[in-house]
Length: 227
Ligand code: IYR
Image (cartoon, rainbow, N blue to C red; front, side, top):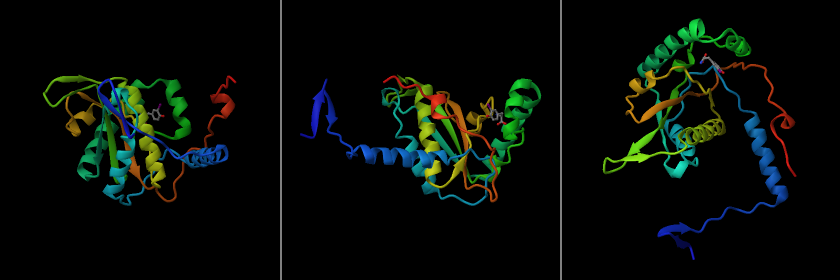
């Protein structure tokens, strides 16, 4: 029996390939090794990335679980150079304000290891920018307002999958949050139920490419086991 009905709604039979303990550890370890090699990158090559690759990466992000399966996200993928330039100029304008006025001395001190500053050339050099929008609510086919739930959690999870998919495709990205980023709503012409969430340049790393020499926390620093 492939289906059963619960409260009038169809549920379908589901299974995943069984992995024994050794196979499961092997896969867990291999994926860790893969993901541990991911780094946030700020130096992008101008080398093109095929639109179909970006499409698949976005489809992967949209496999994320979401509150009541509302999938409260919109991914705007931009390769158009004049739109990228417009985004760069607007982001740099906000970042100038941030670095010179809004950010505390301690915050700027915390960022020194990353060598960041208001200049964001990667917003033009990267072949693609993905602007992620969260949908606070939606309108259904009848024009009625439909609620969305756990929007930040849902879109955050989708962005995690997006970043993993980018890495898996041999590409790099940066979780960029120019702040405030309302300018993205205007430039991408998004409706009022959508708010900008993250801006991710996507492409190949520049060669050579340098990243900060930083360490990840150890397992004992991040996990507590209750056995
Ligand atoms: N948005 C600024 C500042 C910045 C803030 C944090 I927290 C970072 O981890 C990195 C940068 C910028 O993009 O430069």
